[in-house]
Amino acid sequence: MAEVIDRSAKSAAVWGARFAPVLRFVLAGAVNTLLSIAVYQAALFATGHVAAYVIAYAAGILFAYFAYARHVFDVPLSTRRFVVFALFYIASGCAGAMANAGLIEFLAMHARIAIFVTVIIMQPLNYFGSKWCMGRMRRAGLSQ
Image (tube, rainbow, N blue to C red; front, side):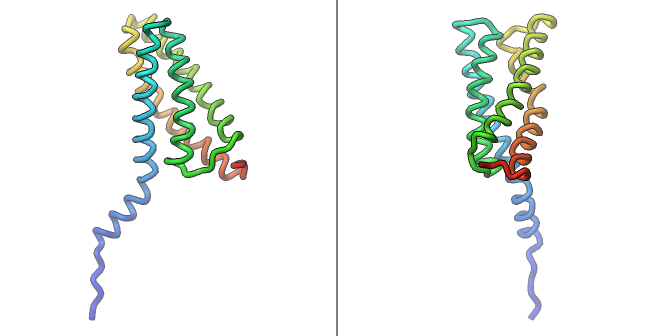
């Protein structure tokens, strides 16, 4: 008797396995972005846009490290990995703060709108940087 191969089910499984980490990153990133924007918007009531951005970004780094390590890249939490991740995100945060300030101060964009444009600008850099930080630590055997 001939065996029937369900190619659509097989290709769906392959697609799911290949893109599941990307989808988890997008979901975790969306939650992180919403959390960071909420913190930024709340901080604007008490401080200026630069300090609000720093506060929101610090909250985002903490959330992102735990979410990406545990739910996206499936790597153990470690002090070394957190340091590399945080250093990358601090550098990325400086670039984002400059972009945010530039949008506000040079393009006269309102601070409550500029953060959304900043997020769009910084998203690709943060995706590839997160992947590099988590993957590099795993390959280098530095996951302790």
